[in-house]
Image (tube, rainbow, N blue to C red; front, side):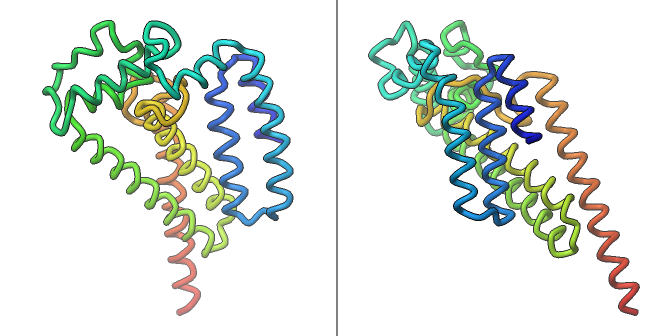
Length: 231
């Protein structure tokens, strides 16, 4: 119900990307904690029925979904952002044009500092650096899930679920951003965690990391208490 209430509030702000991020993370968490598969698909079906009207009855969203399949069909309209994003990847090559040497950010690629920062990095620093970023997010994913699993072993259930949720939010947001930039998902304004411009997004990410550090401290305290009782 809490997630549903949050999603309803976001609907009034017309931010479909945040709704999809929140609901996807919630369903992934439900799978991790062992929700019955029949119940999972029931909730998933209801969520899909709720989201579909938000897409179907908004023409600009439908154009985004159809244009990402071939942005070259409408290069000055719905496919403009994705086309310029792909051009940025092509210009960057393996090692990039050099830091600050991007051409696409000069009025060609809108929101290059935020929604398309990954494409800008690819153009300036190349494919090698973008692969490094993907590896770093994978390491963050593994570290957070390792912490969540340890909390679960020590019966810190709330801390475990919170860690899983934070890890999923960061990871899924990064995946959506990267896939949008390389043309594997329809264009949607969603920043890359820790990298995209925006004070609020960065503040939320740092709060999440702070919570994870606190959870790690509590987990270590739980382990030390168990060792002392053993003696």
